[in-house]
Image (cartoon, rainbow, N blue to C red; front, side):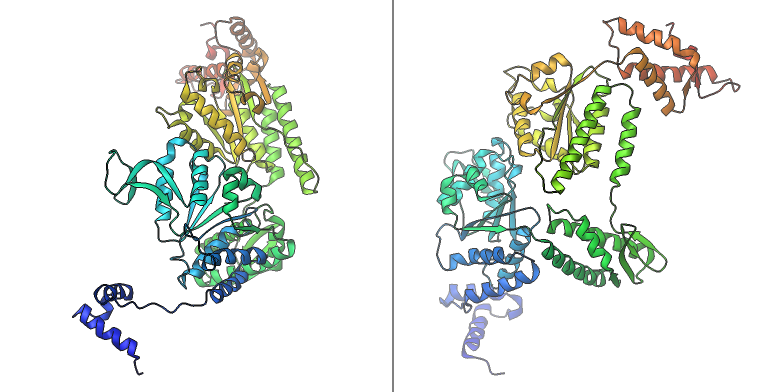
Length: 618
């Protein structure tokens, strides 16, 4: 094929510039830079019609993302806008909002990948800054380092999201970035080994005094509404935003189409990656429609299908690559071959879990008022869920609690049961109990406490945060670290009110003093539950229960002596009593005494604790 004059001229210049190096030893970009440097000649790619590029991108997005035609069109227009109206500070700043799981992140990532092919964006990298990470003003350097890295990275797109819990200083900085195109720094910084660090010298060469937006697309992602962004960033910020892109919730017909498409992709994926032929029964689609989380939509469906893929992988690992069918039998989704089957997705049996938890609650000795409260709370939450499912109004009540009482009265046990109950009825996603004290929340130096507290809070999201001896968080007005912890906790309770239950525990008097430490504490803990000391009869029942769980039984002849002992200890106000630890310690002591008594005697019952074993006369 005959070469053009331009190609021949390039080859001649390459030979002259590169000498003996071959064309394959150097990439075309480096070559063109050397040609420009040595000869002043620039070779530019012919520019494509950007409208055609974006029209093509929109068509591809619509093929992959269901039901968001209007949002995808607006997203493409927002990315094309800087090619029509030039912005000297950044490509564009936009707001993308809508419910969780409706395709916001997927659309941005896919558009970046498509546009990178035509160099509209420098690469398909999308930087995501989780703003909930930056909870304290002491994290300013960390925030600036992360932002600086994103702005100076090769990707053209930076997403900011999760503004709950973010310190106001950093929201103001982002507002300044959009309004002014740069953040003017209040300290001097320098680059050291690719990292932004604070300069310790007043006079420094190449000091960094501001962070500019640097020709990026700035995308602010939220869930609720435009008003949310106005409250976060202010009026001037909103005035600079030219593109507000709303991703709506999908209707049931669109969900069906989405499921059909994703199931087809699952068939292809399992064939390509696992080399197994999968047949999908119609019952699977119906199962997905019934079991996906409507509040998360697309994300929930993708999570379920990921579980399916993992189950298919396990099936191949255990039973081989013979073709199998995905189907639902007795409301259980499974993969089924000729001789073998595996469940595709393990679901909690809600009714069985609640029955088990009720039995566990019944087995707890005493605490009748506490039990009644838990059952009323459970009933209320279940009723609100039924009303919500039928489209009726619901009444949200505060679920945060304060447990007052002496140690060993069952506070931790009840907290664990509450977390399990809330998980079983769907109020909490995970139901874990995170038990902490002051040392887990309060730092040892300035700026350490808020991040430390937030780290614990985030570990408890979806469950219960149980703070024992909570009164120790407040040691007077001069305890700045403790007050910072309390302030952080109060704010997080509001920010994550649907994801977290906080339970504070401690002695009555100390807890009442503690509630005065922060004006917002008492109002946020309307549920104050008193744990009374156990009576002598209850302590005996606890001792019997503890022994039974260890495969021991207490001789009934010992009951009167044990009752008398518990009553005597309770009468002595100077000795801590009336709690389960007293009974536990007594049983453990009796087990040791019994072992000594029977060590060389094979004629007696080794599971029986007699009165002598308790050594009550001592």
